[in-house]
Image (cartoon, rainbow over all chains, first blue to last red; front, side, top):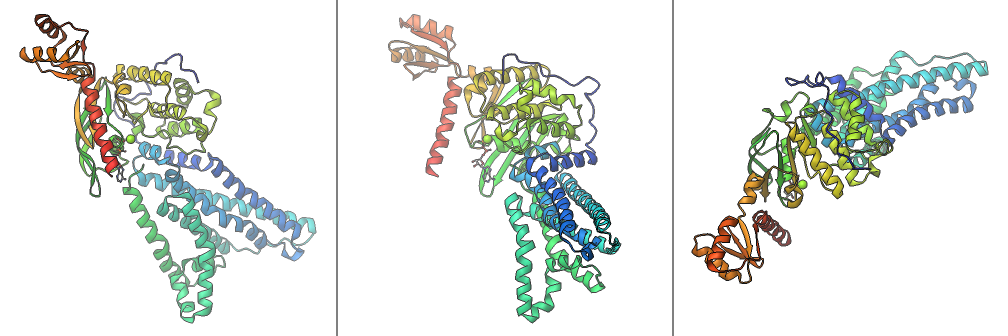
Amino acid sequence: MSTAAVMENPRLAESERSHTEHAPIPFRTVFGVELRKAFDTRSGFWLLAAIAAAGVIATGAVLAFASDSDLTYDNFAAAIGVPMTILLPVVAILAVTGEWSQRAGLTTFTLVPDRARVIRAKLAVTLTIGLASMALALGVGALGNVIGTGLKGVDTTWDLSFSSILYIVGADLIGMLVGFTLGILTRNSAGAIVGYFSYWFVLPTLSMVLAANQSWFEKAQPWVDFSFNQNRMYDGGFSGQDWAQFATTGTAWLLLPLAFGLWRVLRAEVK
Amino acid sequence: MIIVDSLTKKYGGFTAVAHVTFRAEPGRVTGFLGPNGAGKSTTMRILVGLTPASAGDVTLLGRRYADLPNPGREIGVLLDASAQHAGRTGREILTLAQRTMRVPRSRVDEMLELVSLTEDESGRRVKDYSLGMRQRLGIATALIGDPEVLVLDEPANGLDPAGIRWMRDLLRGFANQGGTVLLSSHLLHEIEVIADDLVVIGNGRIVAAGTKSELLEAAGTFAAAPDPAVLAAALTEAGHSAEQALGGVRTDADPAAVGRVALAAGVPLTELRPADGAGLEEMFLELTKDNAREEVAA
Ligand SMILES: Nc1ncnc2c1ncn2[C@@H]1O[C@H](COP(=O)(O)OP(=O)(O)O)[C@@H](O)[C@H]1O
Ligand SMILES: [Mg+2]
């Protein structure tokens, strides 16, 4: 690094300089920057690469190991969907927590002081990445299904209804929202990831054991356990009561904590 | 122009910043000086809306920071050079700022050149940067939007002497072009060479403010003599203040007056000069001592 000559501070061209009023930063700009931030670090890049790789490997595994009768679209989609279901919420977590764990927020929130706007952009980016990944999964799965059945000379089966797809996509997006909420609540990458895996692996097990041993809890579970309702979505076919239980637990475990977390994030000092 | 009006920040029962009032004028470099823990960073975070104030107002270019439509284009901010995602490259961090502010892409290379970060260095991840390189990157980020005001918290930390010199010239040039610069430091000598105006803060309160020459003139004259007591007595008799210090006398009389008094009293002078910054330095040391005592007590 040489410091020999001091350069004049290069100014913008006169036409670029506005002496009156700068245009407000449009939302699409904030969105674009946040989208870029999801890919521009090693951790972010490899996480997204891992999601894509897992999809391809899962397709290959079904092709290699499944019996002829198991070569169905449902199985392909499920094999690809599982790693995605687990990893996508981590994308959501890191989108939020990097601002605090890595202290990047000092710059982010000085350039865009309206923090709610940044958070909205992050949420939009999270859901966009979720939807794009799932579209990719369904596409790769369809390709695997066509190739697989073609190679083995069996009939191609399309046994995944559109409504089942919607349930699966919905459940995965809810998983990402859980990650997002944990990120907003903890503002700490490690804490949020531990929290998320507890929610995903530990809580359902505890809840299942409790339900198996206590009949009162078995009856109450659908009304109090959100992960139970989220998991049920993967099977689809919700009744009116299922939706009511989903809405009740979702409000208590997702929306209220999210609202509380946002309230704090908008007020807390960034340092 | 930055106007800070009676800013107060309380953390629970502790007042970190108390009724802080000052201005930073366009065309001038304003140094914000105070020992560690005096409240400089807190004040600067409040300035840019990262920390909510308990009371008081700040306006930058006539507005509250949060009301600026595209703040990076008007106010360049560097609060903590290490507060960056360690996994991003320097160039990427500048690119994110360039995109957020919607300035031409060519600004990224212009800024890298301005702060002397090479192509190779700009492609490294920030976790592998030295503190000095981070400061340079931070200054590049602050300047990329071609702002009118700079707010820099301890930007000289981690810079080598050549780097400090470089920054001094850069900020001087920026102020000469009509820009407003507010920069903080806990080192008197560092800020003395850069600033036109000084705002001194201690324990959350402004203890002195004015142009550098005002504050330095207030320090008077220093004169040394083989017998300082005789000189001090002569000066007092002539109606000047006189305080014995450092083997000499400090007085509010100007050097010519001290010379006349010494001649009349027949005292040979071994040294005669304006007491440059000594007053400020002593005040500053006093502040630092107070602070150190508190830290020991706490
Ligand atoms: N979040 C906080 N809670 C309590 N005290 C704080 C907090 N942030 C800063 N302080 C205190 O406020 C004072 C001023 O800190 P700061 O502005 O960082 O000082 P400086 O930048 O001048 O070194 C210090 O005593 C510091 O400990
Ligand atoms: Mg500080």
